[in-house]
Image (cartoon, rainbow, N blue to C red; front, side):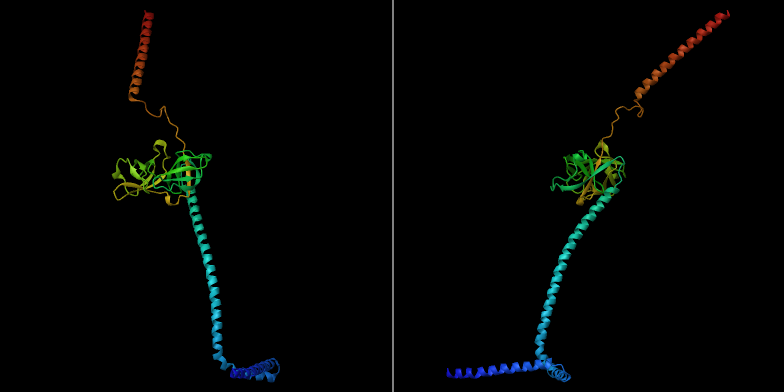
Length: 323
């Protein structure tokens, strides 16, 4: 205990002396660095040339730590920039998707405007609100209805071809039964072979051609249009083209883009006036013609007999006068 106490008594004054010497040296260095004279400038330069190069080993850890701090700060800035770029990229992707959808809608609207139809046919354009979402019923819902003059049975088209027909009308909405629905049946015509048939949906993307008289005359790629028979649809509406499935059955590859039904055109097609009286447009029955010819012949014969009788009477009168 006494020895430890002696050591503490010895170390305490030395520590105070060392602190005082260090403070004095620092004060001297401060004064040297602050004195502004040519001689002190030379002394400062000599001290720097003498001691600073030899302290490179001591400054290496400080330099490394400084470089690490700067690198970490640079990494933090790069990470923040990367996150900002990621956020901007997400925004750009969203804008690109929106621009793509707007471009598709614009193309479809332009295609709708370019569809050439009968000038007598007018139309009402509507937006598709929803589809049936059922594998057993293929239909879509439009945002036009009775208030827009929509009538049940009217044909609907997109910018490319026939889509279906109106099957149910509400006040502000209407349902379109697609050509692919199993209950859809429309009369069609194949101009290349001059044949008429029925296009029957079967809930597949490609409806079937039924009730065709000469299937062997039909070739894949032949154009299919609506025939207008029965007054179901106006004639001449593009439906699609013919192809054969694996079972050699004739089907139609529809021209309408069923994957992107955004806007549809409802065609106003009013029923055609029926001609009940043939009038002079159609020749009458042959029996009627024969009867009319016989009556005409009898009339002419009677008129001829009357004229011959009148001539005989005149001749007799002339003879009597001569006598």
